[in-house]
Amino acid sequence: MSQANFWDRRRANVAVEAKQVEIAKVEADLADRTDEEILAELDLPVPEDVADPDQIRAFLTKAVPQRIKTRALRQLWRINPMLANLDGLVDYGEDYTDSATVVENLQTAYQVGKGMVAKIEALAAPEQQDAVETPDVEDEEELPELVLASAPEPEMAEPDELPSAPLRRRMTFAFDPTPEGAT
Image 1 (tube, rainbow, N blue to C red):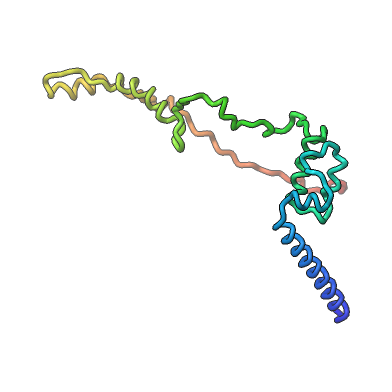
Image 2 (cartoon, one colour):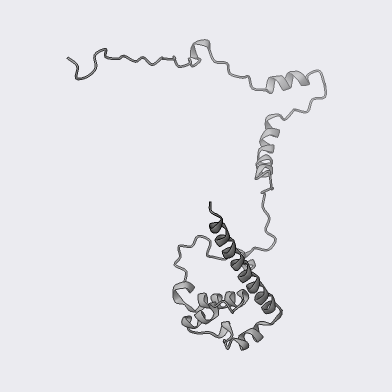
């Protein structure tokens, strides 16, 4: 790397930095002023009053601060039919946060982190109570026999009926000892 090449790059970087400092000073000056003052100085109309999309170009110069450019671009999106009309293919184009469509006192069985578990447990609870219901017995000695008698017996499968595990088979490969094309 030559020293002349280094100094050329250094001079270019210093020039860019000086330009950035100058732009920062202008932006700081414009930040203190109101939008109306800036528009009057640059002889520009209020961005919301523009009716022709071609007039928006005047707002996109370096002299106009970003906040006024943003207002002008928003107006462009409103007045240009190609940009203002959605084609219906936008997945999230509709407003789903409309509070007018919300039902008052809406209640749900959903619980965060649990889902619909409480509702399912409530539906299953009467069935479980019917299955384990104990009869009213005055003598405590008869109670265990009655409970055991009312419990269903588990069904046991016969050893012959048990499903057998599938047999494992190994893959075998056979290679032809003579290559193709050899005689």
